[in-house]
Image (tube, rainbow, N blue to C red; front, side):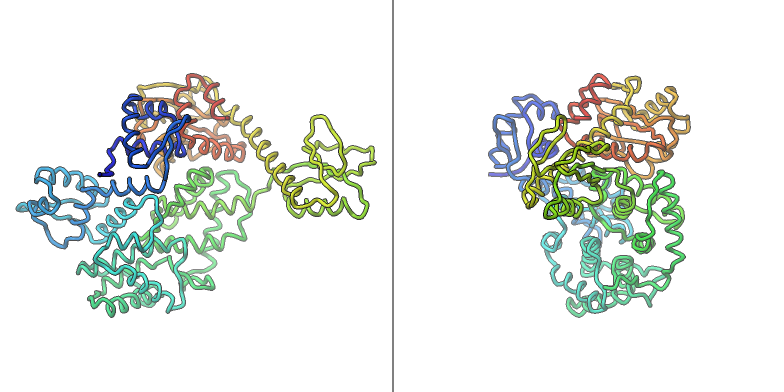
Length: 621
């Protein structure tokens, strides 16, 4: 019995995953735009495949990994197999023979070839037909980029590993190739940085596999034959030739040299470049200062600029060799830390202008990690909590408890100590009380502990502090969030169907409202050019590069029929104008808003809102 998924069944599983693995039948049917009876029929088939189950609360995914693996298998369809066949061919293939090979009619094959041509055009490749044959026209480098793109698409939910690659290159000993690469690097006293290991290994294996198929690269210009990267590439090619008895050209060595650029490091973290100097760090420090000044962030990055400079130096080398790192860090940072990601986007723009390079989204992800650590480690923590400790000093009881509390929470704790016999009450506002004697204070949380303040009691206090800080932050954010919305800037409009129309419409409404200048709209479009502000094919939060609004405000546009946003359709657009004095408060609200909108059920309720007040209340929940 076949376990082939229909397109509708795939969408149902994807929707369930967005709902954290569980959703009601009504919610699923509504979002799928199908009847409840049709959904029930589809669910019966998914139950038969042991992918979903149901209970009184609705439907749930039984095994996330099994569902993902099955959908990944389904995604490796006929089109992908034909494309792989064409990419691995070093000459034109007869169309009729290709159709016979995949057991399809010639007309069906030609339809698939049209889809393939549209897909590969994004990588500057194209299909060429001649005398009933077909081949892929384009540079060898672009073909390798296309192969890498296909492999990442084939394994969207799994970490890239040798087993996966062995499945893809079934006629090649991938394990031996991997061993050759690692041993060559280690033999020269270097190692591949963990963050780059998966991407670099894949690129190297693709290159060496192409060599095994007698497909070589032309010699690259400006190859530094004295560099450590060239030495590593030569070592890899020497061992590869010896093991597989294949011919390697100078162009192949130069290409593998380019792959190593900016991705290997000495155990002592010494950069393998003679050209690195402190003037470069000074330049990076200046760029950082400009970036943080733009966001009104007063941070001390002196202790961390060296590591960031080393990373950017490696990044420039990767850019110059046109070999970037592929990673999922950027999507995680964009979702979980959107403000930090936005600062990294601004930094990337300046680096592109100063060093005349191109920085893709994956590399921005790495930059955002560095920026995040700088901001988190350098900014003052205003999350203080005032605790009144009531304990006597007999046998050092008060001092013992005080030391234990400060040992665990010295960065956030303002501790006030009072003897139980004292009649003097601290003048400061107290958030809650820790006491070694039984007592009650109206309106205050009290945690009673023993004089020994044991492990269980310490855990109880830790939990109370964490809960209080979370609630305190939520209250402050909700107050600010409420102030960011205005009923006059809340719109439901099904006639606005494109990104350009949405930004122009909401931007002009803000101009008319007197919050921003006309130049604000142009600045929003400029920001869109840097990196997409769309999240999860569901909503977008565009904003300007400048922060000169008279007040921080968020305008809302809902169109349940859909707004075309680049390559996807969204239903909700939040256009933000920022007042520079609010940047720190705004960063928290921005992060929390994105996080809240990632809750698919809440997002679905927001789509149905008819008033600004209703929208804000759901967002704050």
